[in-house]
Structures are given as C-alpha cells and as structure tokens.
Image (cartoon, rainbow, N blue to C red; front, side, top):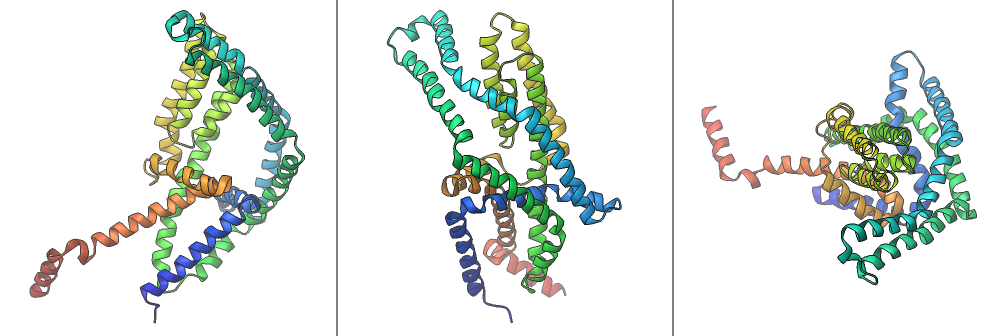
Length: 362
C-alpha cells in the first residue's frame, strides 16, 4: 500500500531541506565533486559514442582522459599565460582608457565634463579603482598560498572524480533506478528523461556553443590586432552561457576598446564590429539551433533568476547547481500544470458532464 500524499510530501520535503542545508554548510568542500560530476555528465555522450563504435567503457574513458590531458597541457603552455597577462594589463590600463573616454567626451560634449563635474570625477575614479583594486585582486588571487592550494586541489580532485564518475556513470544511473519508489517509478523516469533532455540541450549544447564562440572571438580579435583580444573573447564566450549577455557585454567591450585603439581607422573598428555580427548570425542561425535545439525549457529570465538567487545563497557552488535545479523545477512545474489541467479542479462541471455523457453512451 502506497504512503498517503501528505506523508510523501513530508519525506520528500525533509530530503530537500537536508540537501540545501548540506549545500549551504559544505558548499566549498563539495565544489570539486560538483565540478567532477558536471564534467562527467558533459562527456558521457562521448563515452557512449565510443562504446557504440566498439570500445569498452574503460577504453572510452581512457581515450577521453588522455585527450583531455593533452588539451589541458596545450592550454597551460599556450593560452592561459597570455590570458592572465592580458587580464592584468587590461586592469592596469583602465586609468588610461578612462582618461581617453573623458577626453573624447570633452571634445564632443564639453558641457558634460567641466573640470570638477560629477561625470568627470566618476570616470576618473572608476578607472583608478579598477586599476588599484582589479589588478590587486587578480594578482592576489593568483599568488596567495590559499588560492594556490585551492587551485591545486581542484586540479587534482576534479579530474579524479570526473574519471571515476564517467567510468561508472551508466552503473550509477542503473543503481539509482533500482531505488526508485515502485509506485512512482514510471513517472519519475519520464520526468528524469525530460530533465536530461533539457540539461543535454542546454548545458552540453550551450557549453559547446560557448567554446566555439569564445575560440572564434579570441582568435579573430587577436588577428585584427585588438589589444586584450584574448580576454575579450574569453569573456564573451563564457557569458554566452547566459543568453544575449555574452554578445552585449563582449561586443560593447570589444568595440569600446577598438574605438580607443583604432580611432580614425574606421575599417578596423568596423572589422571588430563585423566579427561580433558574424558571431551572432552564426550563433542564432547555425550553432544554437543545431547544438541546443529550439526549445530546451529554460527561459533566459528564469535562468538569470536561478543563477542570481543560488549564487547569492550558496556562492559559486550555487551557480553550478542553479542550471540543473532550474531545469528540474521547470519540468516539475510543467508536470504540475498538466496534472492541474487534467483535474476536476480545473475542468469542473464540464468534466463531470462529459464523463456522464460518456457513461450514458456506453
């Protein structure tokens, strides 16, 4: 005999409360495990594809691991040092950029930037603050002993967790399936498939889109000679995960830097703007439809709200779990809406009359 609905709600509510308490109390300690699980989930289709082409799960995991190590070494040797160097240089150049902004506005709109005006003080202060605090923060984060230890722990634990979870992913899923409540197993499996489809479409799809666009922006901006092009491309690609934000922030940053670097050389400024226009056309017409799909059930506003709330409550770990939780909640909300629309509460007397008529016809 199944438990009453009230009892089920009590047990599941207690389980959810325990999960959030643990997430709040142990967020920093759980970060490597969440990252490892996210990497394993992202790479599971690759392992499945290799299995389908004759590899065992162990061999597939080994191939993926060796490839990841090679890519990581290349990034460490070729990309990351340049990225850090450009990021520090961008922070240090902030006062000069702010002065250039002030000079430009003073020439075009002299009444706005009189000596001692609020706007002029704000621009000068912003550039000085970014230079002092931003570069100091970045250098401190890269050089402090605690940060280095945390980074080393991440680089050691996350790959190990990812490899083990990738190796045992299918067995873990099968084990969880055996623990499902028998009365509700079919419904839970259906909801899990919908959640997986949403996550696969968004996380795997958008992750691939971010990687492609970030690489494209970084390479093309560096080829046209834009200073800090690698940093701008990295930021634009990373923020592409949040719909529309990556293009707006990256485009504004790149065009703003191009205006001061190439002022008067309008062809180069147009080239920078054209790079982002091509990127957006490719994202909207090719990358997102092919890799993400037309409907993944995650509205941009819902995603931004989830990232903001969970990030404020649980820090970086909260941002990691925000997307899967947002996808899960979206699936549950749609399921509850479907149940409500099929219920007598929604249909009312119309459903009773229809049922009575059907019974009479029978």
